[in-house]
Image (cartoon, rainbow, N blue to C red; front, side, top):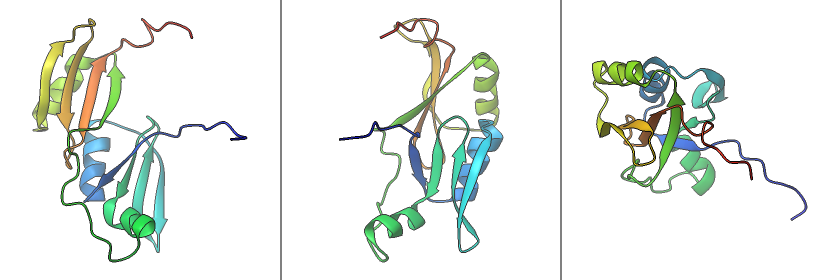
Amino acid sequence: MTGTLQGVGPAAYVRDLARSRRFYEDVLGLEVKGVMRRAGAEIAVAYRAGLSIWQIDDVHNMVFGAGSTRPEKLGCGNWEFSFETADLDAVAAKLAASGVPVAQPLRTMEWGQRAIRVLDPDGHIIDIGALHRLKNAVAA
């Protein structure tokens, strides 16, 4: 390989882009970096935090062809997107007030970080922890 790959972040496939936008923008407070459209319709949203969401019908048609079988279930518990915040208690309170389903209640993890895991509207796991990684990171 002649070039170095540069990651741009994961894309979560979602069934209802508007519903997912409300979750990621209104509940989690993510800032939109850009919106992709096809024939005037919104098909995907990229967030400054590094995550994108993409309407499943559009991406599935593009990758596998029109009429291809869609997955019956999204968010199968085998993927998560992790965030960190300086105000975890406030974020956890907002999640609770918004009725967001909790996968793992707020607790202190074995490595000392407090964290909560919730589910987005399609069942994708969202990990939100107190600031931790950079504090204990070791240079390679």
